[in-house]
Length: 166
Length: 388
Image (cartoon, rainbow over all chains, first blue to last red; front, side, top):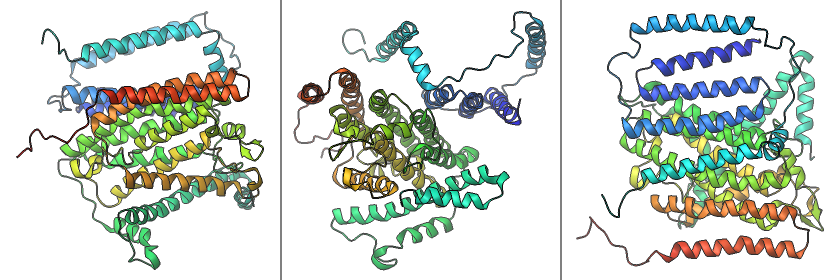
């Protein structure tokens, strides 16, 4: 655990908390984008170049923009009048912390975890591509088909009905 | 001469104490990159104003210095000394952050461009992916600027910009995928190395193959749209929404937006040069004695001149034309181009391969173009509301 990891961890957790607790919805979306970028930094720090860049491209470039669009098209980015963090949340936080401690203790003390650190394989982008195109070609194709179906479905839902009904 | 800058850097790094050398080396690289591209920005603003002026039958700036050559300095001083105005209802923090969020990723993108032999600032294994990932962050900056200004024109400009950038990102990336397929690497230096050979005196650039030519044209059109250049400058649209998302910015923040837009254009043209025009390699085999960095920046200036020329020639598109062009014309052609690249890769070299691939490039282009134009009836313009 280097100093860099702690800086990135604080950035991720801080911006995630901000994304949940800020009053303005657009501010929340922007802090969520910071969280995504922080995760990408964490991947890069673990020498996973491909995953890190793909994280930025997909989450910061597409998902964050999508969220922003959704906010603007539905609520116009209005500010919330009352605070989102209510006193009842303190109980929730306490219970969540308790669950985390119990689950974490169980994971750490379990014998299933490999105790010996294996050398991390240096996966280049080329290897990832080769694997995706040979061994994992079927899952890749299925995901592609699924996404295409979702896309067509979204277009059909959004399409204006001119003939017949309305 | 070819390695003059690299040797200069090594000499400068040698002057520093041994412990600080890695830091010093990266500092020099970053400073040189920012310096070179910022001065290119100054040259381009002058070139654009002069060039556009000549195309519109006027002189352009000619008051400051001989032939108006010192105009960029005057512009810089002016934007630094202007008052920085923030609207009262603006979201101050986001309004302040937006120009920086735009400029920083744009400069980051320059890092992977090989601007000469051994002159890429960082040689990443996934260089092209890095470039596109960093470019995606600018969309968020445009939204931040448009939303935080609390101005309906800036909001409209931001929405237009987002819709346009997302639509044209697809053909941009898909046309770059062809090169990645042909070379088999995402590293920019590797892509340039794959194009450094010669057929006789002609270079082995990707643009000189059927799929590469089609890919290059698609890439540059999408690049113009991504960098909001005319004829795709709807997000700015001076005559409709005044200046789009940076309408409420003044002084140096406005200059930052301007800088970010131009550096973004340089970066994406630089990627186009790297992918299709052979990067820093010479265009003819007997011209290799000219230093590699001169070739890179020469090609970059040539592409910038094409951008200026296009801006002076074509009128702005309408929103529906923009979207139809991206989704119904560019996207299918980019997808077909990927298939052609695969075919090119697996067919034996020879005239047959050229003929088949050229027909496959030209055929869909003609058919799609005719098919899209068939439904349109061109006639005198009619007005729905402004009719007298």
